[in-house]
Length: 183
Image 1 (cartoon, rainbow, N blue to C red):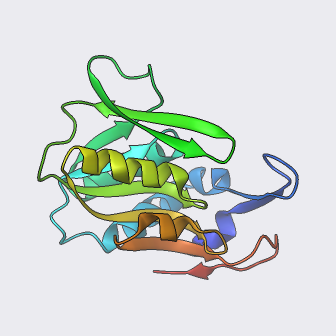
Image 2: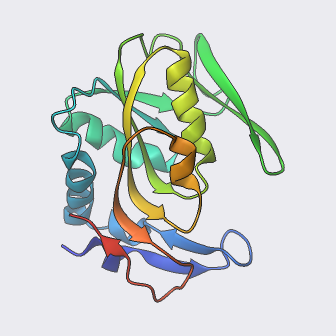
């Protein structure tokens, strides 16, 4: 199945000059969702993953079924005040301000083997914060998996030394671009 045919380019969203890669058409197709999860999980089958860690909200879409596929637990990463009980948090700087992410304090233990998951890798700020949050808890981050990577942006560099797998790679903002599609 050609998943790239189900990604809709939306010009000037969420602001002028951005070519948004909308996954909504893919999500309307159950076979495409299954295929995306299978491809995103394939590289990690024999890696002993114990936890999938994904940031709200689109990371959850792929994180939970990947946790099922890899027989791992799922760790939701949320903005402050969204998780009940005791949490660990990580604050980080953005281009124009700062942000904070949280996980439950009992969600990750030292020695857990974490796979970070999100729908899209662009600038890498959120996923880098997830990486640092997992490492704060002395977990081993095995890698990161994404449905889409915008290779013209520096997201991969923010993940430093961990392996990254992607299904679709876009090299430009061109709406007509046919991405590299990894099986």
